[in-house]
Length: 327
Image (cartoon, one colour):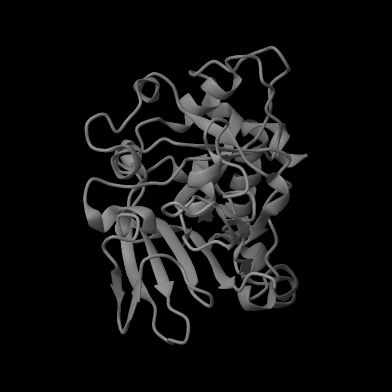
């Protein structure tokens, strides 16, 4: 498997492709027939998941997101638990429900918290949310019982994708104590269709801002609701890999490691509706619509790129539309 072959093989393949696509190389440049066989318009290509994901872990690596969530649910006194500053907290997600950009997401049903003196309710999630994330795709794995040193962890990361960790906040809030997220997360996770390798990202000290758009149901125009930046993360990718394996856990090629919601210090950079609307207390205006959480028919699109001198390295789009819950 190509991902498991490691950085020397990746570099060789990237160098060969760059050479073939170079304006100075005549092989493709001067052969129209070969170009037509080798290069296809993107609109004629069916995008698939960029790797077979065997295992999926989602981290909680943005301090701003952790602080906001803690303030919303526990109050402003001590919003971030003490352990958060000592290790990259994460949960293991459901790899079977990871889907490619453009796949519709069916509103999940589940049990939500009691309202007043009523018992817990069951039904379609009333607080469906997006989470702006990126994810690392693992290249070579490690043997069971042999941790990855943080100084060599980069060699185990093939590249990055955009990721939407869809969340049912009401289901999540009721179920996550004491064992963490379950049905509030496992109904769907969306990925962008290609992996941007770490070698391609090497020239950039940090990622350029990413944008999130919501296209409300029934409207033709989408609205930008947040702009964030990868450098808002407190825990780095290499720290995440090292911590994931410190107990001897073995990663495998294609494993997916989500960063957690990437929120910045300002409201304009909050990475989910939970924060943007402060758990529904401050509804968000979208042209002629207002949202506390996502409604059926809403379409969410993430875009992201690194901006170079006269060029961009793009991550494509990560999008999905909300369909009604089954009856």
